[in-house]
Figure 1 (tube, rainbow, N blue to C red):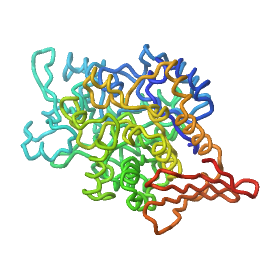
Figure 2 (cartoon, rainbow, N blue to C red):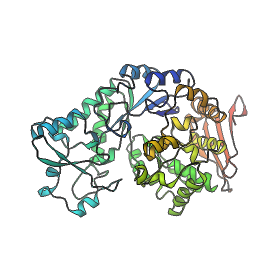
Figure 3 (cartoon, rainbow, N blue to C red):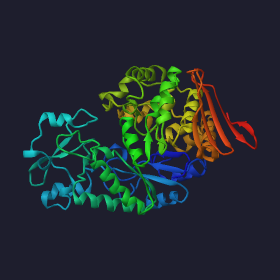
Figure 4 (cartoon, one colour):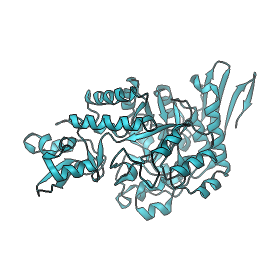
Length: 478
């Protein structure tokens, strides 16, 4: 993978479709990115693309695979593969409902009756299952013959889990991955992969060795096509380190909360401790299409530090309220906080630019979410219209808005920082944390032969400087 900043965007968020996205990339965002994670562009029945009907079509609202292939000429493209589930509206599930055990897709889904002994699960067995929402992970469906059955359903009711223990499912995975590899993918992101392993009397989450077996199965398919695999999960940092130890790319989902804490408290210690042990083969994030992860920093921050950061977000952040993270806004995921990163820092340009500088100096390939790229504020109008907490960070920009936002000084500085991170050779070298006794002074450095880049930041005032070595002298970027 190129060691260059990757853009993360929906196919309809920087312009209304893939053709408009390409236009933006050729103009306002020219030469800023090595890769693009285009969030699900498939026809979908829920969760903004994460309940795919099929992987073999692009939703016609966005364009088609020709548009994606054109983008893949210049950019490494990351596609999502929802290895845990498929849409309830898919042809696979509809055929299952129509024909039941006569359906070729009967074994694709996890039936209550053939999973539990004697068709019955005890309360203790259900309570043991790792769940992100307060509901039993099953959905009762009615077949065309009038009979009923419970099928496994971890997330939204439109997202029906598939059974990786069955041959039909493995063939389904292989067929669709090969199709995506042939249609522009350089990286496949295995969404929520840790939920696919299900066994009686376990938490049905990241079961070993089953998890490694399915990842190896997927990796072998992708290796033959020269495509990289990125397993995705929000969980305890030790799981990310386990995955990294197997030589997979991982996400640094701990960084967002650690940077917020550092900037809220002027205390670098938890951040520094993490940077010392964080995997090096990873993608760094500050913001994503989901919320700011809390579960990811358990044991990297104390409970007091985590609670301080959560409370500070609601008091120091701009236009964010606790109610946005409640049932009133269809948001019961207690492991994430919904807010744009810019607004989490009080819409403060100085603090926000420093947060990006810290991210870009942290080990790994930086990803920047499209709202964060344009230093976007909380979209209160959208969240009130949809009553979906995550929509606070999912504003769709028109071409006119993008032109306007690109002229803001903070956005110009982010672009400047991105180009430096992409082009300066020190970032292909060695990372060093420069020790000093002042807890509010952060000093990070990259070295690669004659190239050296240094970030020195004051976490109290948000003042910082970036210096780099060129032609025998130090120059100042900021």
